[in-house]
Length: 116
Length: 110
Image (tube, rainbow over all chains, first blue to last red; front, side, top):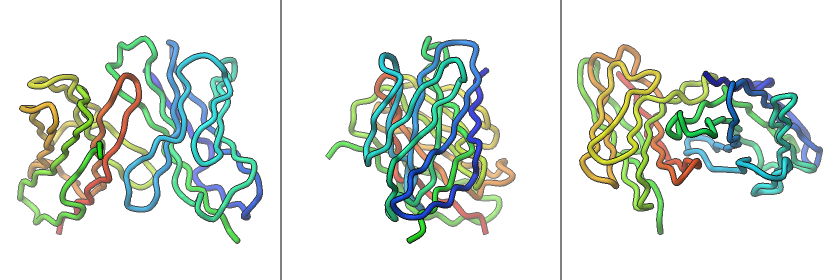
């Protein structure tokens, strides 16, 4: 069974400051990893994903994440945040071997609040 | 435009009533999913379907039912057996290992 832990439920930052949203996962098999963003009362939008290859993944809106297999982590970073980045962010994992039939396991979410 | 649509955006239901949430996609994806979202709990999988006329229970299927008669449609019925149905419901479809989400339906039981 897989699990995902987002270590911070809320992260407040000031505009133009850097931010890191932490995600750790647990799995006995190889995984695919995803970050999604959700604005209030909307669906989830894919920010970035790691399937294979380079462990540093770049996504939309200036976000990037680094896959660390030894630490089973996939932390999301942005060097300078904007007010518009205020949203809830979800980390998710999928079994890369395909035995989970594409099912995603989600973390509990991290609410990022950017203050002026 | 290709995408996933969910309707209605807001839905109110009286206790004891069944209600059906619509999910339609024109992305030609084979797989579709229903999730329930509650504050602080992330997303939990209700049902999923890998192909037309086939679907599987997810982690919290009790009190819900689905059908998959067409590739583009995957409606979810919240039955009166669901004890705590007030939540935000999200539909998704997938191409390979990546899921794409609809805008959601917020269901409130009065």
